[in-house]
Length: 65
Image (tube, rainbow, N blue to C red; front, side, top):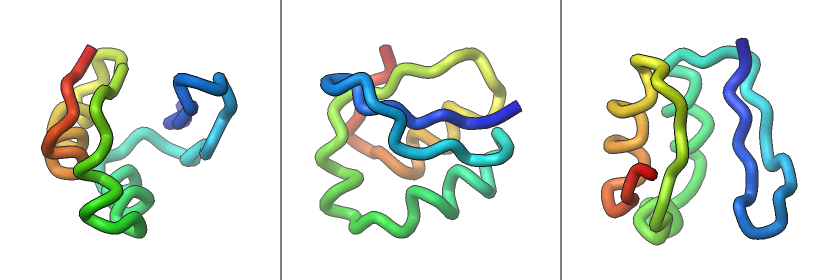
């Protein structure tokens, strides 16, 4: 299983992370500035148990849809 990050406006794949673990997701998004991560407005995700914690840690202002 992979984590796929897609631009919702352009429908373009941005990054495919080789696994779906919280540690890997945090590592990838940690390279973006806090200001960039705070500007994320929405996140769409499936029910993977790692995602809610990772979304809250990476994107504090995002609404999960």
